Structures are given as C-alpha cells and as structure tokens.
Length: 125
Image (cartoon, rainbow, N blue to C red; front, side, top):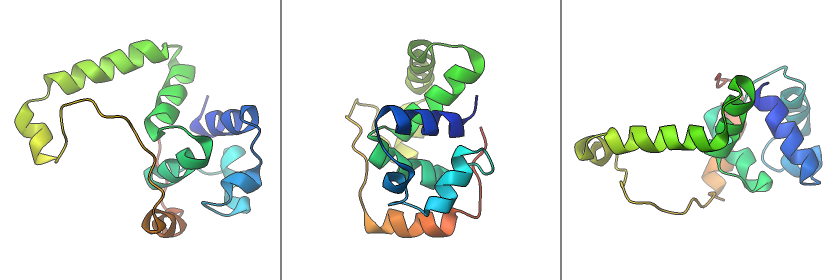
C-alpha cells in the first residue's frame, strides 16, 4: 500500500472531498496523488495533514504499517526507542526537545506557498 492510498482512504472516511484537500494544492495534483501518479513531498504531506487533521508522522506510520503489516503501536514504540537512544547533543544540535509535546499542525502562509513550489520534487518511502 502506498501513502497515496492512505491519504485517499483517510480523506474518504473523514467525509472530505478532493476539493477540501485542494485548498493546499491543486485539485489536479490531489487527483494524481490519489491515483498513485505522483508521490507527495514531505512539505506536501505536512500541508495535507492539516485538512486531514493528522500529523504527517501518522500518515507515514499508516503507510509503513499497511505496507509491512506492523501495528501502529509497534512502529511508534520503535521510533520512541530510537529517539530515546539519541544523545542529548544530537537532539540539541537539531534544535529538538527530548520532552513530549503535543503535535499542532502549522497553518502558515509560508508553508502553503512552499507547497506550490515543492510539487516538482517527490518524497518516496
């Protein structure tokens, strides 16, 4: 299964139309994305996560889970373990905090503008 399938399925289950997602991109791009004719960039996944009301990490976990059969819980546990094993300096150099914070999708104009230009590159899992 691909990230495209996860985006399409989530959109449909949440009762959203392609037009709802087209607020962050073009409707043509969303249609191509859902048909698997292109793959979203990381920036596009971040933008699409806003109307889907999901974290981009959730989209990635859903994609990996459907592709490998792993549970979301085991994927999240694995990521938490890897992050815990990183040295504090690594996280500090990346300007990341090791403490838990709630994810909040960003609604900035800058992201939406960068999404339009980022459609040329593709993010592959």
